[in-house]
Amino acid sequence: MKVTVNWIGDMVFAGESPSGFPIQMDSDGDFGGTNSGARPMEMIAFGLAGCMGMDVISILKKKRQDVKQFDVRMDAPRSHEYPKVFTSAVITYVVSGKNVSELAVLRAIELTSEKYCPAQIMLSQAFPMTVHYEIYEEEENGERRLTYQGVR
Image (tube, rainbow, N blue to C red; front, side, top):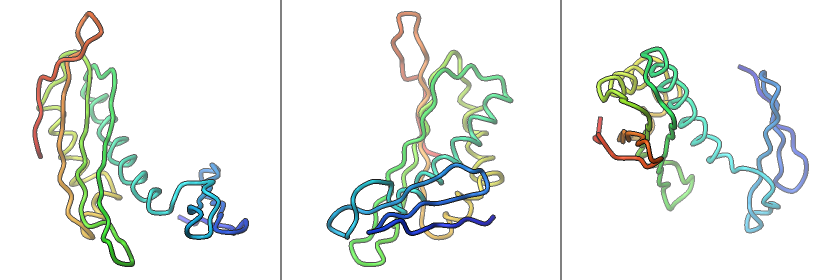
């Protein structure tokens, strides 16, 4: 994969990638930026959560799970000292739907973690990750009821 980031000015960079979608990165004013784009470390977190999420939802669809809503939440603290790397991550999959199987969710998480998500497989060598899951049943009245939760 080849990408290019072009300096626009101050701390603003515009990224170009093979997919053709532009990305703008910046920093806040304390670091010479104008706060007009995502931070590079945020992009790494987005990439990790996005890769994991795309793999899990793809597997759940193939398993014919009736997923109505799906979120990947990530809490990744950073070291206080430079280079301020991620020190760990807690990733939580939140799945809502009708009769979603806990076994299907666990298998999707397992396949993602061990076989399909290159971002997770690569970054898990750099910092520890803990994966949680919550499965909610969509009720007829529009409410959600927690049916399963755990740590994988």
